[in-house]
Image (cartoon, rainbow, N blue to C red; front, side):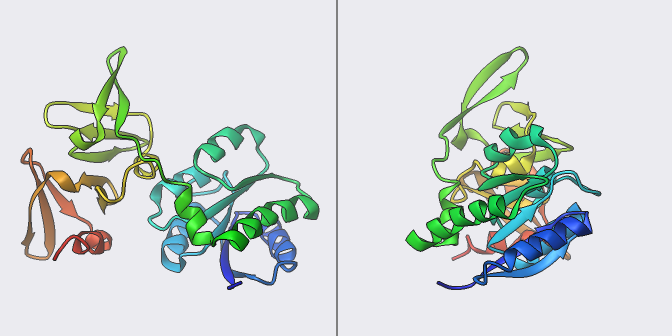
Length: 241
């Protein structure tokens, strides 16, 4: 069994220390690092690409759920928090487990057993991918006091609007109450790519790409021009043959 990496994310030093102590019982898990706030978490998750994260919810800079909206690497997630009211939301975001503080070594071990059982049959990477299959072909979006059904393929691009997301089709725009990171996890990555912190595009509707001095831009079928963030250029390069 190959050694896996874990990132500990919590603003309380005592909580991080406790997880390190408990992880000592699992030599096949190596601690890749620790984060004290949401900004550090996003940076280190994307840079270190850990197999597993222990994620607190209430933290400075941004909370645990916002962290999951901002990351591009998707690890397995075990929430560690003192608040029980977030459990449902945590499992909606495909959390592997939800450890309510103060938790015991025995409770921690049960969470780890879930990982090891899955790893024995497959591997952690497969498990992380398995949590995000079955992409919908249609979604319901709010329009006034009604819900309208639209085909996923009709979506041209999505734009982050603070904690909301604008969904643009050829003839309509809709505002979702879900953050763009949450929506991204429910979209087929074979069709939708992140080109900017604030933009996801449907590759079926890309008309052309051009460079203007030091920046790159996409032109969508409806004429909308979107800039490509420097950290997302590689996502576009995968489409070039």
